[in-house]
Image (cartoon, rainbow, N blue to C red; front, side):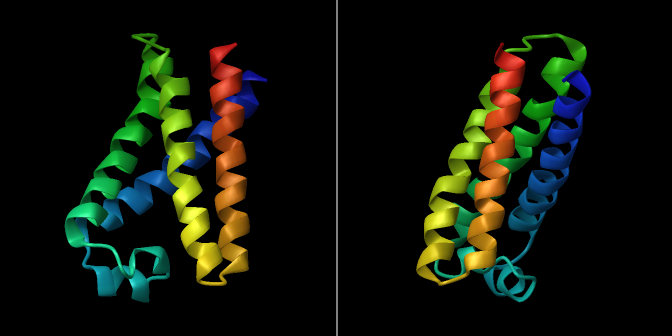
Length: 120
């Protein structure tokens, strides 16, 4: 179980780390051109906020559990990152991007798995 949780945490860290870095450093048109279409009608400050939140969540997924310094932050980070997937899924559903909605659901379920597994 521990191995599956670490693999899930690493995968989520890669996904959210990449997404957060891009949202923190790129313009909205660049993000849309790269396939992050959900940010098309969002303001730059909101995109930056989401990106920084994803980067902080990435740190929270890995560091607290690895160092055992405030390990409760790992399931909290997983829950918070999962919550980001809810509006993302709605936006992609409204844009009729079914494949991306399924990706959002999968990421949400992985976040729930990590949150549950690390909380218990």
